[in-house]
Length: 585
Ligand code: AMP
Image (tube, rainbow, N blue to C red):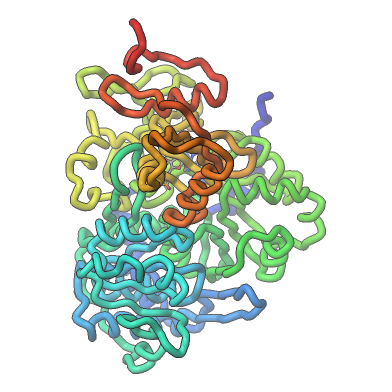
C-alpha cells in the first residue's frame, strides 16, 4: 500500500528551528554554522569546550546538563558546572600520566555517568576518544583496541576481567586501565577511577586543538577484512551542533533523550556532543529496553525531543498503542529515528500512539552526523529518509566499468546513495587504511554503500545495502568478523554469514558452516558452535542460528558467495552465478 503523506500545519512549520527547508538550505553556509560556536579563547576549536565550558563561561553553569537514571531507580543530576569540573578532573588525570594530544583513550562502558566525562575529558586534553560497545565479546574489543593503538582504557572491573584481561599482555601500548567500579581487590595493572579523580584539580585549560586535529575514532565494519577505524576531527562539532538544531530541533533548555548505546557513533554525536553544544538537558537511562519504563521516562522527565531507533519502535508497537495512551506525553515536540530502515507502518503508528509521526533520518559512522533527514517543518512521507541537511549535496549514482560514476537522472531510479564531501563531520580517513578510504570516493562523490532512490520532490528512499554488511537491532556487523571467529573452532572448515529478515531487529545473523572431516553435524555441535561464537563475539554480534552445509558456494577466486547463501535461504532468484565455482557456463 502507499502511505499518505503526513502534512505539517503552518504553526508547526513556523515554530521549527528550520521553518522553511528550501529557504534555509539556500541561505545556509558552513561558515555561518561555525560562527554559532565560540572557538577556543586565543584560537582553535575543541569539541569538549563547545559542549561544556562555553556554557559555564556564558553564565549557564547552573543549567542541568545530564540527568542520569540508574537501573535501580536512583537519579543523579549534573549541571554544566558539575560536568565541567569532572571533565577537567579527567583531563588532568590523563595529563598527569603523560597522556597527550593524539593519544587514544578507549571506553568500554554501559550507560554510566563516567562515560560522559571520560569522553569529554579526553577531548579536552586533546586526546582521541574511541567508544566500544559493552556487549562486544573479547574478540571485537581486542581487534578494535589493537587497530586503534589504545593507550588508556576506562571500563568496569567485570567488563575488564571478561573482555580485556585475557589478552591484555598482547597490547603493550595499553599503559593505563581505569576502573569505574571495582571490588576491594582490583585486578593488577588497573586503577580505581574515583579515587584517582578525587586528587585532581577541577580546572584545566583546554588543550589548543586545531579544527583538523583528530578527535574521535569510531569503528565500523565492511564486507571483508578487519574493522575500520573512521577518523573524525574537532571540526565535526560544527555539524553535530547545527544538525542537532535542524534535524532534531534542539533548543536551549530542552529535555532530550537519545536512546542509542554510547558504544556506537550515534551515542557520541547525538547522545553526547550535539545536545550539550545546544545547551539541552540530556536524559540517560542505564537500564535496558522496557516499554513501561520508557513511557514513564518520556512522561516524568517531560522529554521534548526523543531520538530512538526502528528496533525499539517496533518493540513498542508490539506492546500496543493503548499503553502509550496511558501516559501524559504532551511535552514531546519531535520524535526522530535512525540507524536502520524505518518501515512506513512504524511512522504511521507514531501518529496513532503519540499523535505525531516518527521523523526518520539517515547517516552513518563515516558521515559523523545526520546528512539526510525529515525535518519538523517538512511533510513526512512514511518510508522516506527525508531530504539532505542544508550544506550537504546528495545524489544517486551508478558505478561505471572504468571506475567512475554517473548520476542516474530519472526520479525513482535506484542507484547508490552518494554525497559530495565537504561537511565538517565527514571522516578524514580510515585509520592506517588509505586504500580502503580511497575506494569510498569516485567522480567527486563519497559513495555510501547504500542503495536508494530519490523522488521528484527530492525525498530519499532507502532500498538496501550494496554490500554484505548486516544491520541487526541497529548495530552494523561485518560478516567477516563473525566468520573469522567461527573459523577458530576446530570443527569448522568454512563459514559464511548473512543477515536474514527479522520482524523486530530488522535482520538476524545466520551462519552457514561446513565441517572438517571427522566432525558430524548435529544439534549438540550446533549448540556448541553457537556458544563458541557468543563467547568470543558477545551476544550482539554472534549468530542467532547456525546451519550445516556440505560445502559453501564460492566464486572461482575462492570468495564465499554470501549473496547466494542468502538467495537460497530466502527462496529468492539466485541472480548471476557465472562466477560460481564448479558451475558450467
Ligand atoms: P552505522 O555506520 O553503524 O551508523 O550504520 C550506517 C548504516 O545504517 C547506513 O549505511 C545504512 O545502511 C543504515 N541506516 C542508517 N540510517 C538509516 C535509515 N534512516 N534508513 C535506512 N538505513 C539506515
